[in-house]
Image (tube, rainbow over all chains, first blue to last red; front, side):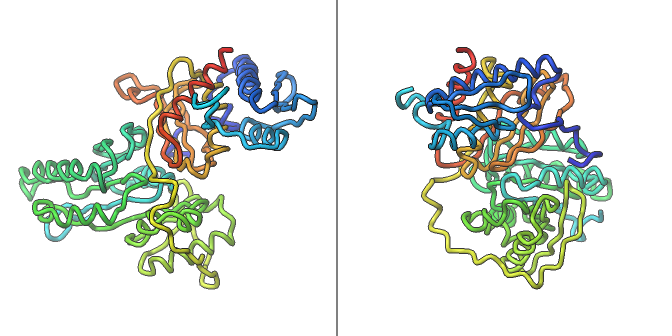
Length: 99
Length: 324
C-alpha cells in the first residue's frame, strides 16, 4: 500500500506475519514444524525446525534432505524430495480417502 | 467535480479482475481528494465484505455483499440505486446534493452488464448517467487471464480507461506486450499505469507485438469460478492457517484466483490477500471497537476446480495435525 493511504504492512515473509514477539515466533516455528511433520508423513517425508538456524528442514525417511527458506518453499522442496505433487485438497486430507 | 449538465447523478464504474487492485486504486484516489463528495458503493461477490474496511476515506459508503451485481445481486443493486435516486429527488435541486457515485464492482463482474442494467431501468435512466468505466488491469497476471478467461476480455473491452497496476513488479518486456494486447482489445480506451494507486508513466509500446489470444472454449472445463467463505475457528491458529494456505496456494494457485479476509492474530488484525500464488504482505488493520470487527476470522476464497466443502475439510485436517 501507499505509505500515506494504507495501513502498515507486517514485515518479512507473509507466513511470519501472525506472530508478535520473539518467544511467540519460536513457538510458532515449532508448531509449524509439528503440523508439517504430520502432513508430510503421508508422502514419506518429515520436517524439522530446531529454531536455531533459519529455514525448515525437509527430509525423506531414507535420509535425503533439503532446507526450505520459508513455508512457501517447503512444498516445492517436499515435492522434489518426494517425487510427487502435494495437494491439500487431496482426498487423504478432505476425508475422501485413506489417510 | 462538476455536476452533470442534465442534473443526473454521474456514475463511475470501477471494475477489474479479481485482485487487480481496484480497492487499492480507489483508496488512493480518495486519499488524494478525488471522488471527494461521491457515494462509494462496494460490491463483493462473497457474502463477507472486506474492502469496505479499507475505504475509510470515502465520504459515504454502501456495501452490497449479496453476490455479484452484474448477475445474482443485480436486483439489489438496482433497488439500492433507486433508493438513492429517490432520496436525492426529495432534496431541492438548488441545494447541495449527491452528484456522483463510484461503484466498485466485484472482480467477477462484467461492468458492461451493470451499465446495461442501469441504462435500461425505466427509473434509473432518468436519474443516473454512467460517466466512465474505469478498469484496473494486473500487470503480473493479466496476460494469463486474457489467454484463458473470457470474463477478463469482456471486462477490458467495455472500459473507457484502463489502469495497469503493479507495474513496478512486472517484467518490462511482458509489460509492453500486455499494453499492446490491451490496445488491440480496446483501442479506444486510455491506458495509464499505477503503483499502489499512484500514477506512474508507462513505457511506449508501439514496437511491441500483442499476445495472440486463442479462442476460449466455452467457459473452461474446470467449471465456473465461485466464492467460498471459510470461518477461522479457535482450532486454527496462525501456524495452522499459514501452513495450510501456503500448501493450498502452492498446489492450487492457478485455480485459486483470490483469497482475502481479516484474521485476528497475536500480531493484530491482519488483512490477508492473495492473487493466485502471490500473497501480499498482510496489512495490520486498526482495532475496531464497534461492530466493525464482525467480519474478522473469515476468509473468502474465490476459485474453481474444487469443492467448497473440501476447503473446509482440508483446513480442519491441518488443524487436527496441529493438535497431534
